[in-house]
Amino acid sequence: MSLINKLNKAFDHRIRLGIMSVLVVNDHADFKELKELLDVTDGNLASHAKALEKENYIRVEKSFIGRKPNTKYIATDVGKLEFKKHIEALEKLIGG
Amino acid sequence: MSLINKLNKAFDHRIRLGIMSVLVVNDHADFKELKELLDVTDGNLASHAKALEKENYIRVEKSFIGRKPNTKYIATDVGKLEFKKHIEALEKLIGG
Image (cartoon, rainbow over all chains, first blue to last red; front, side, top):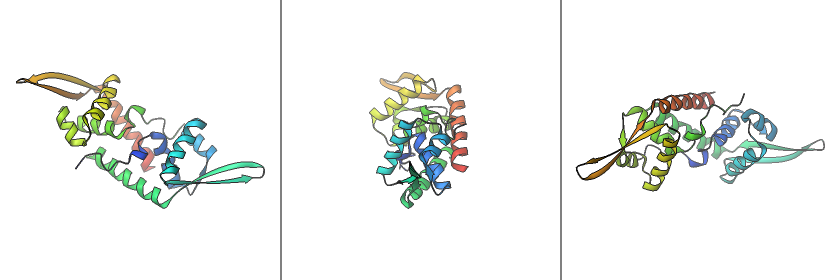
């Protein structure tokens, strides 16, 4: 039984923690909102969001607002559950 | 002001969180103890410990116990302080 085996490696990076933290509290956030909240570059945000999408922890909705493309991120049920488990494991590790 | 800019990238990886968590609670831990507590490979433990050592967050004492070499890890004062700040930022992010 390891101290850290309940920590999910998909959430190791602080940008991924940040994305998930925003998306469990808000129904959705678009690319620009996430970028501003986390203060990260386009490339960093895109690559970490893509990693979470691959894990099926978030999903992406692309649409147009008027003529402007809009990318909206939403946490999936699996993502919310896995993030909750990760937070619990973190709290156990650092509180313990 | 970013949601994640107080998170320290040196502590992103769960193995580093694990090493620091052990070393802030215990005065020291040797390689074998850390390896067992965290359930990681020699190579993974060595590389993440080295990264923390480079940041001056932990220090290493090498000695012999009888004829057996022993590597002991100790958190530095800077390491303890930076880890505390990281934990506070994490708690703020995930609790917030």
